[in-house]
Image (cartoon, rainbow, N blue to C red; front, side, top):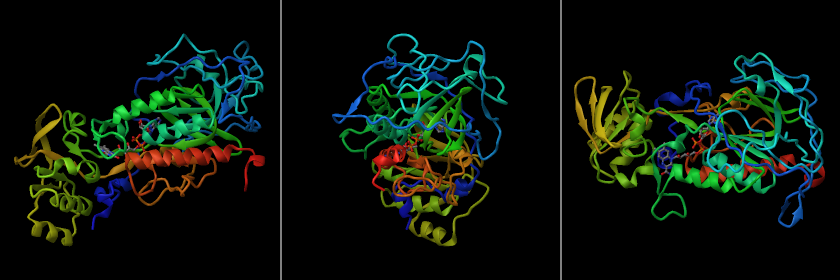
Length: 454
Ligand SMILES: Cc1cc2nc3c(=O)[nH]c(=O)nc-3n(C[C@H](O)[C@H](O)[C@H](O)COP(=O)(O)OP(=O)(O)OC[C@H]3O[C@@H](n4cnc5c(N)ncnc54)[C@H](O)[C@@H]3O)c2cc1C
């Protein structure tokens, strides 16, 4: 019973919410900052991996520019190659290594020096001519200076949570040019402390884990993090992929989606300040610390009822608040809850009492005051799959990206990792593993045929 919740899986059945249409990935734009570091100078010797020269792989120029889209809609126009007087960049000298072109916006921590050289990344890294300038058609509000930029990396990773950062570190160490896009609004950006991730006896705040991973990634010149929202993606493995962010279009030979999910936490003034401190969603993550405490489970489905039953094994002070005009809890679960003495309240949250991240009570619209130490929200989550759908990636009935054991999606050259996938365990450890696996699979995919055994 309720094994899903015990394993920390996002509540796909939670309120049927996971089946709701994924939100467009454009609803939260955080400060647009591109992390810049000086790119290796042209003419430097190529980096070596494990003592062996890195094989330069043949360039794969897309014969035609890929189309960009979100959610399958062709809403953002077509990338066109056009030459504009004086704007095109000179050919990249032989031996030029990876460097990322700076975008607009400020520069965040770890900056060394000023603007990096404007070096277009080229898939083979051997100094093939930089692509001619291009313009993004049909996009309004794009600053002219950025219309012309089309740079390329080996792998574009969308999402800088545990899955994306793990993937990027692996890819960087495979000597791939990797660009991570992240807007910092995912599950790993709340206040929670992870006590079940290996190697941190006192636990580690997930934001600190992200910070450490970003620091680890910063050691590699061939990897960058762009704090940008990716709003559109298109293309395929043959032609290459293109991603639009902040009015800039990036090319990539492979795409790795690690976009996570959006949890449906109850929204009341200041709700974010409670997430991870006294408002949780997963018993695997936070059940242990809440043994013996007064817990309010919020949700109106069997998933919520199951969570309440499982929490009841940790404390006898559990109540369930439906927080909906619906009650989709089955008769079976109602009987179980009643037998266990778990009170079910059919009402909705009006406001909360609490301070400094600690909830003290929920006040309902009906005027009840429900005292509590912790709230477990089982109202479902929406996987962030707008980009996946734009690429034609297969999703499962609950809306998560279907991947195989190597994190391959149904679309060649597109990989997915972490909570956005249909895999069972939505945990940091799983996200880190899946990111690593996806990176390895993408790296292998990018090898020229003569390097492959199959
Ligand atoms: C309160 C709470 C407590 C938890 N406790 C634990 C715990 O104790 N142990 C544990 O193992 N797990 C815990 N988890 C779960 C854990 O945080 C997730 O499993 C993990 O963060 C998943 O990592 P991810 O990289 O797949 O996704 P996320 O961490 O959600 O990262 C996805 C990233 O993608 C970015 N993104 C999405 N779309 C775009 C786009 N279009 N362009 C650019 N960027 C984009 C987002 O900004 C985000 O940073 C907890 C979660 C919560 C909410």
